[in-house]
Image (tube, rainbow, N blue to C red; front, side):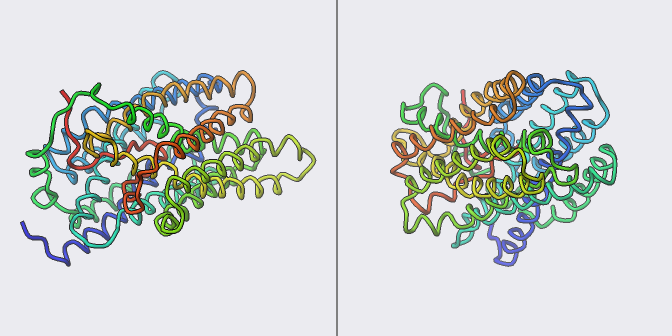
Amino acid sequence: MAITSDRIQRAQSALLLVFILVGHTALCSVAWVPVYIDRLGVSFATWGVILGVGAVGSMLSLLVASRIILRFGSRGVLRVALYVGLVFLVSLAFTTNPVIWAGLNAGFTLSMSFVGMSANTHAVVLQKLVPRTIVPRLHAGWSMGAVLAAMTGAISTALISLDVFLIATAIITLVLFEILRPRLLGPSEDGHLEDKAAHIKRRFYQAPAQLWVLSIGLFCAIYPEIAIVDWATVFARDVLEAELALRSAPFGGFMIGMIVGRLLMTRLADSVHPHVLASRGAVLGAITLGISALLPSFSASWPTGVLLVLATGLWMVTGLGMSGVAPTFFAASAHVRGVSTTWALSRMQLVSQFIMIGAKVVMGAIAEGINLQAAFGLPVVLLMISAFIALRTTRGAETEELDLVSPTTGAITLPILSETPNDD
């Protein structure tokens, strides 16, 4: 059916606000991570296992989400998944049993992965309807929601209890989403029926060698982002010894760097080829992240406030450097011979999520066995590996293809495009 320009504009504005809203919801617990660890009474090694279980939820969603979105449409799946996710979110405040909490958190990551896939599918549909590029702006909205989460979380830790904060977040999210929902494209407008009729089935193992290499590179690019989300406030508390209300500052700096980088990346790629930009950015991110981890070791006599400011600045540069790495691997998937771009994207994401389960456990074990500073060596090494792979394997990525990028922080697992094929 024909969709008017006014309808498209209203849907764009609403979707941008939805990205901000769900970005905040997915990452609203970042400032509370030290509180969760203390309430559960677990070691860093156990916390790493819990995070790994959560990653299983994200991975499982990749196996079924495309089929569900193709059947019911992105708006309906987004609504149901968000409601379920909010129930899981609130439940996290009402248990101190590590096993139960791990299961509830896995349910939350599963639900929010569906939310992210649905929102991205909606974004891709809208992109097809307008001549100018809008996807990076929408994804910047997700990062804005992450910064907002750092701010509200930091304030809330000093003023209210965890259960009050999560209940308030759930209620506000639900009300605002219901206000925005009618403005999004409905099932008769989002093209999911046409995509369902056109999809191609392909088996998982039918992947070219190049795609496996890109999948490893994508994991090496994405995991450092996830590691910062998982451990940022713990690092601020245990390594930087930051006060309660300031523990989200380094994470906020990182996300600001990501926002700036992802808003500028297509412009920068006009003068520097994406594969060079990604490789140099990964090296820059590895250097600044490594320096921030070592900072307290050679500046022990410095005031805590100075360390916090320096770490926040370094993480901002880290976010800026890392912002173009994952997008370049996504863009390179369009140049893998013998498979469609959408199938390649989904397979890359599935492989990287599978490896990420083990990486989360390993980082927790290093943090427990040595210390958290040493644990940050893992994402530093992975960034260097991603720099090498990007330089060698992503030369085909074009500037306009960087719009395939999706936010990879938090519980979200992306991207899945609306015409992603099913598997046998």
